[in-house]
Length: 434
Image 1: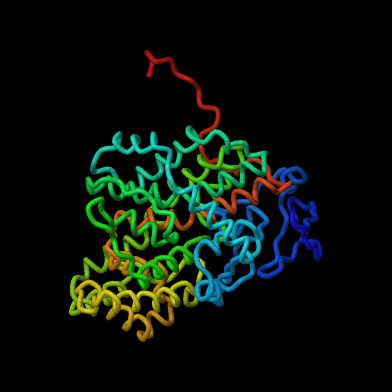
Image 2: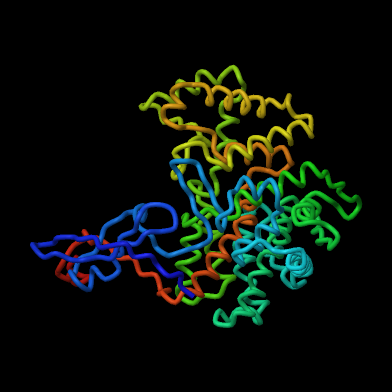
């Protein structure tokens, strides 16, 4: 089903003295959009937009970002309200279905996710095929892609029931897949999910408990991780989400599409930003070095860059960072980690950045990656697990975007065009004459 577009007028483009008329649409919020979909057919020209930064590749009702004013909406709800009043599975239901659940709907959804959290036992043997030092993202990506080999009953993308089952399976099994990747990297036995634990608590249990000793769930830490998941659940048409949609446009099954999203997220410019922020803090070393490194960051000739500050979309304070900042301090207090040297550097750097005119003028506020890296480190996760946790949370956003695309009557296989600048009409030279 396609949401009816609100056409408010026409835009005109003149090419070689010929004038072409293009529909102009007004979204519910945000800049107006010029529809160029028929421009090639009419004028035999393409538009050029590297990175698609000025191009809307779809119509969506899921997530909206106002980067100038620091606003993030999930299905029309402010992210601040959702983090304060809902849990991750409630938000997952919202992203998937368009509305917050009532009590019965939430209970049914939570039960469905809980009782889908086990992996097919044969899948656990996949892990043994990876090198012991394999990156957890490599393992996660591979295992998710293999899900379609085990769950044939939910790969028919034209069947709404199978789409729903696949969506729930992905949300349910992702924590188990991620936790097993973590345990495998440590050489520790896998820990199976428990049906009496919540989503974030269950993930912590699978990561940090042992067959010989149960992990005692700290509610403050579990709630903090749940908030991290909510804040990373979706973020409009970013690189990995666009990858999922592009893969899905070919008719690929949902498990393959989500594996493609994980691969895209793995890039350091995307999902690896929180790990990069923590690496930066380690490079700074001590609070005494902060002034020196800030001076380096201000020097345009110095390659050093402050990671975890500023954002491609947000030109004011990232609304997720404000929430994460509060959560970060709660976690540090709960774990009595205020004296941790690395976290001391982070807190002092945060203080300076919020007061320094240079940062304020350039709108280089601490972003969500700055705080999430600190939180995840405090919870006990190594750096190479950070992007895996990002993927775990983002799975619900990916699958919601995939589902919306499949149900969109305007959906076509993705086929970007290019500005070709290569050779033309080269003469072939036989091998012996080259």
